[in-house]
Image: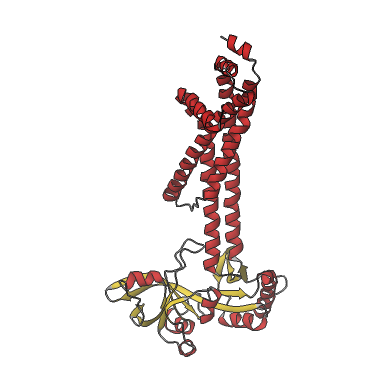
Length: 411
């Protein structure tokens, strides 16, 4: 008996009991759907983390101001203005593994261009900040040294600002008011998408740091115009990140005259570590949920074994008749293996489609990232087929070992 004939007989047998076959495959459907859905969510979270690290910039450290104490209670980081532009210059000058150290001063401010207005983050930077963040200019140019020194009223805007204020134009050479001061747009930033805090990185305006301190932002942090929001430090080599962190700590403690028994008046953060930890947590959760969902596959396999044993009992006379007219034991074994594998594969394909749909619905409803991988679908379906073959092996062996004479007498 050839494979096609065995497949035809197996299909006929399964269609004869449609409801029973559907209920038998249901465990496989649920298991595969859960596995595909969880793997897609986990892969999406990992891809999102990788993308955010890429847009953030490689080998990046953020030095943030320290925490202020009030009434014996330590407030959040950044409440104590302790970092200056000179600190950034010292880090770049004295540490050999530092490529750039870029200070930033920012505040949310209203923008006006023609009859349109928008409120966004206005940040004072120097050109090193764009190097640290690996941020490209898609139109126009970056700040000239003379503009940085003189405090010129020029601006580089994010792509979201262009869409909000300039009605499809690139905005180069146009005037936008930041507060009460007119600025000329000289550059447009490349798109970066959402950042680590799920805020658009493209909704930003950069102006020269000297301009921000003297004409626009002023003393954002306390009474001093020199206090910075943070310093972005780009390290030349990823292997040197830990060493540079220690060197920055020693240098700033010396510059800020922090006593040995006193805590740092600043903090050093590696955003990639935070993002990787978040991605690892999502991945571990996905693995645990996938492991739990895999139990459904095993339960489905047990259900297939149970139904195939029932089928062998019900079809004992049929088996005896087939053997009597020339079917070999291997033919009978193959038929029942094909039936169990077919049940599992149909359940696997249906479950994969259901899992993909569920993953898309989760992404749409909950805002979770998903990445539906064809490999995960093939693996889940292949695993379902393997379960069908494995759990169908015993019923198939039992059917093949029946004595034809005894089987023909079975009532």
